[in-house]
Image 1 (cartoon, rainbow, N blue to C red):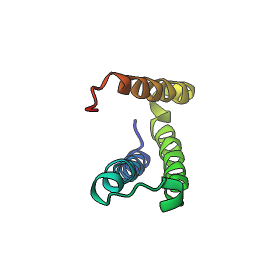
Image 2 (tube, rainbow, N blue to C red):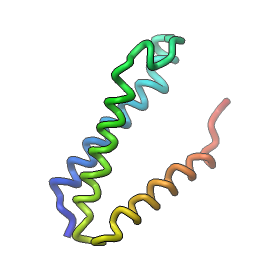
Image 3 (cartoon, helix red, strand yellow):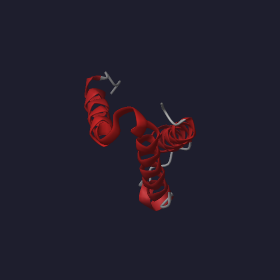
Image 4 (cartoon, rainbow, N blue to C red):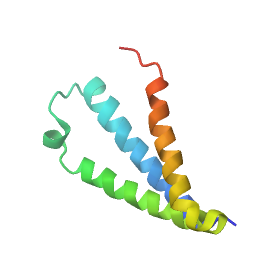
Length: 94
């Protein structure tokens, strides 16, 4: 019942956001040794990631609408919040 076209589009958007996150969190500070803030060094990256994230959320809702119906936004919001809060338990090297 999942609409595969929208699900694939959501996965591509998620991949783009993941690459943007790796670029900002790892590539710039560790490889290029850039210490300037993100909004000064690359001002278009955060709005791009926001737009791609919105497209990802909308397309994921459209892909899963046939599965859960009107509960789809609520279920996806709960999964998103659970994922965000679970990152607090990941041991990061300091």
